[in-house]
Image (cartoon, rainbow, N blue to C red; front, side, top):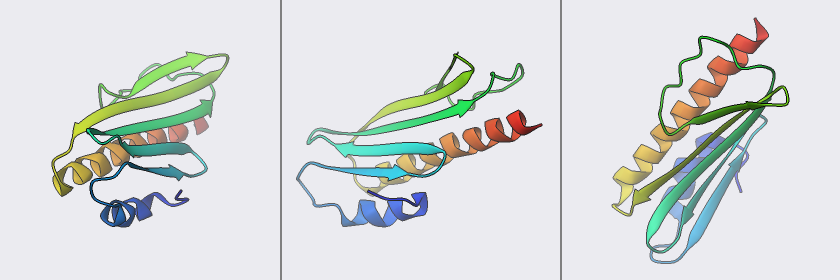
Length: 112
């Protein structure tokens, strides 16, 4: 378990080859989990924010699902990757960064 998303690349380099594993990263705003099932890599991300969804908010990635319910905004993403070496890890990091950037924009918009 990590409390700093910047530690994910080092954690991915350290995972055992050929066995199942998972990495859970949590901070004040979101949770991300990377799981190796033995056949594929799964990336799940989740965030929950109090407030109403802004009208003109562009979702930067179709895999990020946004839902508003009971004066809360829920962001979710679940992405499956084939096992293809370290290039997949880079794609996962980019997806996490996209999610985090979108969450930051949402938080900034809600504070205005």
